[in-house]
Amino acid sequence: MMNARQNGTEKNASPSIGNSPTTRSLSEIKTDLFQGPYQGLGDRHQILTTHSGGIDCFALHDPDCLAPLLDHYCRAKYPQDDRRAAISMWSQWYFGILLSPVLVLAAAGEAVITFQPNFISLKTDDNQCPAGFDIHDRQVHEMKEKSIPPDPWAHLECLIDGHLEPMVASLAASSKVSPKVFWSNIGVVVAYVEKHVLKNTRVSLAPLINDVKRPDGNRNPMATPYSTKQSDDGTPSRRVCCLRYLLTSVDICPSCPLAKL
Image (cartoon, rainbow, N blue to C red; front, side, top):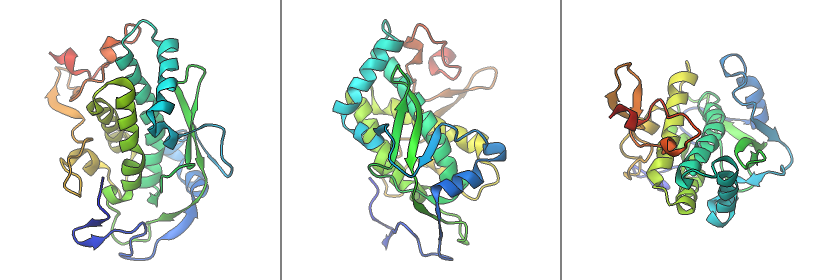
């Protein structure tokens, strides 16, 4: 977990460096932002003024809440396959659908989004596979008026510490899969958004996957999701296998490190 103080300076939710941040609603930012190259990216995210009937994502931090959901998914989708691989696949749906729009909101929208209970809820299909998220609308700080681009670590600290860390811990406890697998699944999403989605933005997500250590000096579990080794066709290999090769009904991942051996 990041410390409240870094480099001897207390870190606030609304940094005072440069001009004061403006405040806008998430729904306004989403409406303005998700156009052109971002059109369609946030289709699975609904921003509501009332709480939805979905599952509070913070409740999933408790393995007692998450495990039954995963059990249903495994039985419905991969009844004959390795449960660990099936749960890794579930996490790829979860993090892929959740993070891509949220990262764009935070980086391209330069919005400081506070993650806390009753803020974001998971929607699933009949197989309990993640299908979308409902976000409770709120006023957030935009940092576009700041002369200095926001640091992505400080900008996304609440997401990483407040949700991703406990979610990975809950997934690992519910599956007996190493946390490295889930952090790698997260890192792959961050790398994709940074390379293929975010264009001409002041905030780069590259430090989240390039920095070996976090600003507090602790190891960065999202670092280097891809190996430096490449196949003959130039495609990268994941550094940590996502276990997808164990699912008999799913094609092997094109970035599978085992395929490069």
